[in-house]
Length: 395
Image 1 (cartoon, rainbow, N blue to C red):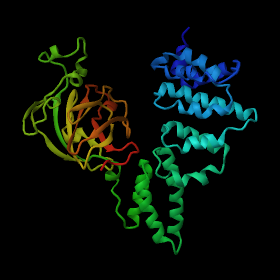
Image 2 (image 1 turned 90 degrees about the vertical axis):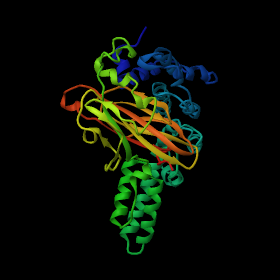
Image 3 (image 1 turned 180 degrees about the horizontal axis):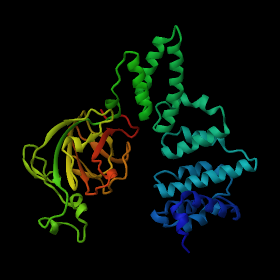
Image 4 (image 1 turned 120 degrees about the vertical axis):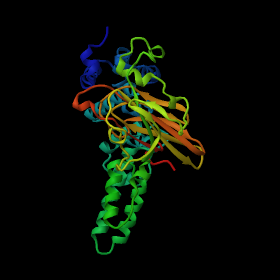
């Protein structure tokens, strides 16, 4: 049978339901046949697909001995969010059960897993949580070595410890120079946006300069084109999917910049001829308000082009935020799209992987505004940063 919709839609209720199943199940005689059980976790899909099989596997996995924890942590490698929840639940259930029974967790094996940077970040962060819970000496022993960690969470904790020490030096009579030097060092290591901005502010107070936008990879220099009409008209109805609502048309219709980027060509816009024009964001995190840059429009489409020089072939992430529907191209290849309107905007909301080529690179965004009239549906804005997997701005 299918799980009730209340469970599928409510992660907390689902977790409690699964935990209840584990309490009434019998432990398997051995853990040797673990792979099929973990495969059941990996097979879970969206909207509850595969949850029944995963719940049955969970009953067996959740009562295994804690020695199996590193192997289950390793199962988080490459798991999508729905499957990852089952792996996390299994780790927590096994560990909680062991502690309740007075059984020790394999702290040395968990620490070895944590320190293996080849392991997936999410799994290492979970290992850190449990290691700190059973070994109070772990932060003091290990954080100094995690200051350049691929995990943003582990790196943030390590930087926080050193940041507190730097502030103590700055407050002393003899350690001001050392404290200032430590702040500069920590700015380079930090990736957490709030932490980066706090360190930059402190450096500014001390007469230093710290370029947050460059450090985080925020793009501030753009060429903008628009607005274009984003509502369906008879002229382009044939090229669009049948039955498409009028206010969705602009997202699906291929405008000229999507097939040919000629910066000298004039285009027929929503309210008259439009040309590419330069725009510099003054926002700390590079946000571009298209209502200000191009005028307030509804049912509209705009394009934003950034040109970036790279010293070589560099793997990067394009991390964007926008409350509007968006498509992103890197050097002519579309690497991301999402059609959703007025769902809020947050930093690194959308992440797409790509590779900068040596020399000039072009990043093109298409940002679509629908025709809703509510006050909360008026934002037409975006931001983008180009960074490595840790969140450091690309060279």
